[in-house]
Image 1 (spheres, one colour):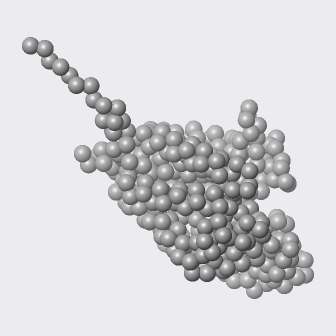
Image 2 (cartoon, one colour):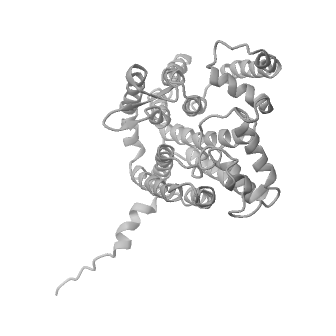
Image 3 (spheres, one colour):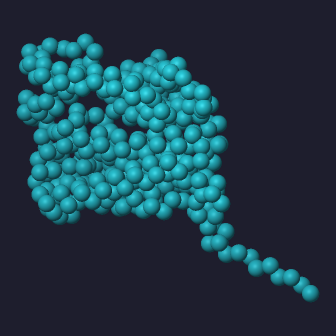
Length: 384
């Protein structure tokens, strides 16, 4: 008697590859991707091939997310040290013989031109999560000091380029790992208080220094100009303050429900600078208003909460720290971008996740999502 084995369909064979994907996280990203495609079509339809290129970048990020999601957290852990060493080595190479554009040395030619600082957005949390995993159960204050040094080296090299936006993201990613690892509040409160005092001093004395043209020695000229512009954008309304003023006008003119899709006057009359990249939130706000902003912010909050939930349920310390740090990267991206467009933070080159145009940032976001999916998948495998 012959036994006939039925060949499973292609769909059934492919299902195991997708079964571990986290549904709520994928849903939040889907909402943000839809918002990004709509906004890019409106703000970039007369901007060459931005819309098509944005869609291509989304597909590339999706593919990277799918590939990274198949890598178990244990394998990711083995990549931590080599990736960190590679990133720091390339940053040193950039400082020595990197490519300079617009006064900043951030790129290096290794056959293709790359920006090594982007590597550290993922390599930094990987490295610190690896470090604390190795010290699990025997953490001492010295271990947190070493972690701080591991973080300070790349952040210092990136600040030297100078690239304040990327340095801020790498710093936030590293500090979140150190915090989630159990840093004592006794060590957290003093620098926070110093930061608050420093902020108060800036608010009190910086306007006078700006008016007198006095330069702060710890800041680059362009960084001090951004702070001066933040405190009073009307000092140079057609120059340094133009971005902030036009962004706030666009956000305010959107009202409750916005002017409507493709109806943004500030956007289509080209008053908003960088309307497809750093200031795309202003274009979104003008056309979809406060109601659209609430939906967008709610999607980001849901993504962050889901990422933190994945971190809480992760099976190992390494996975928990990595998931928590990657989640805070998404939060930092969104908070800093919306803050600078709204005029409450200095203007830095930080895109809005899944909304702004950009290839390198989209690859980083895809890797971050893949890591979260991988950790969520490993949790399910452990449970079963």
